[in-house]
Image (cartoon, rainbow, N blue to C red; front, side, top):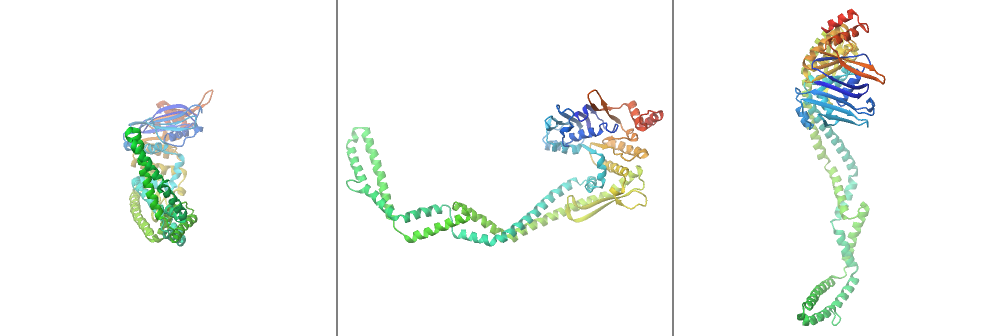
Length: 550
């Protein structure tokens, strides 16, 4: 439950701080006094979008802080999941800085707005004035029925499976589109693939072919230069090897005289060994060099094929051609394996459809089971609220199509008067009747849920007199099991509260401020008298006020 609320520098509020109690709490005040400002501040605390324009003094930050007693609401897992410190008396704080930035904290730990919104959903239900008209909205009607039917976990499971079902359906559409496009291009792709595969391409083959081509295309030059090089190494008298061997012979004679001369001898010996190897390899190379016009032509044709393929596919090397070949093979495979791929996805869709059908049937059965009792409870409460002949009918129809929350269509119908025909609730009920139906629904929901706090913003719109008295009694009963806060203009309801706050405006020399005070018994009597008789505190109004309070 909400135990405290502090608001600083927000709209017309400079600084207010109130403590709240369990049970039924009343908030009253003249129109425009600032009740909507209070709700706006509380909405920010629960994750509503921040508006920099709502800051009272733009040079100071706006701070809204709420204290909540949460020991009875099993929220430990939420705090653990959000990586927050769990405290039975938790503090939520929202700040709007002069820079326009917004910050949020739970127990002094910075959190995202989404975390505030999640936690707020467990703590408070704020019933705004316009929410009454949502009774005619199918989405709201489903939420009411599903809350009573305890369908929350089943709906979550359904939504997850529906998401997977839609993904599979999209995959099937994409696959069909891909296959349609692939079929159009199949003949051309298979031609390109065959052309590349027939080339028998391998990594590094282009470099090997180009090297062999250069050898065969320059046989004469290779023979001439290799022969000359071997001649310089082998010729008598002027040959390099013979000359070096003479040098070695002379150095051998003096090697014994010093380490330096011995070193020269060893180095010459190493050079001779290296030149011997070179000479042998040059000789072998010369022996392999011979003209082969047929091989030269074959290599030339292979290279021209590679060059043409590179130009055709805008590739720089054989590696890129091999990559293109792989891509073409995949495209061709899509067409050739189209039937198997489609069959696989279609089978997965059928499996998913069966799962969804089972969950949707469970949702339908759960809803169908609770509707009669819900109708009976609602009609019973409406009798207490001055609608003795009101009849509610809820039509639940199972469809073939998978919808957002099952396969059901739901519609609430109302016959407000005796002998009247059923019409859609938004067309059959007046504003005051809608308020009474909404209160009946909320009171049933409150008994079903473990929600700590519910706030009603003028749930009494369109009612007065004895009906207002009955509304007050229902709100009072709801306050036995949860914290109920009602903003009201009706003294019959205000008199039922266990505690009573008044919001009012006060002018000083500088500006107008919204303030709030908790009324003591005498102050409550005066407030109720004013609500009954305007600004005239007549004896009869005071007596009536005392009677209401008692």
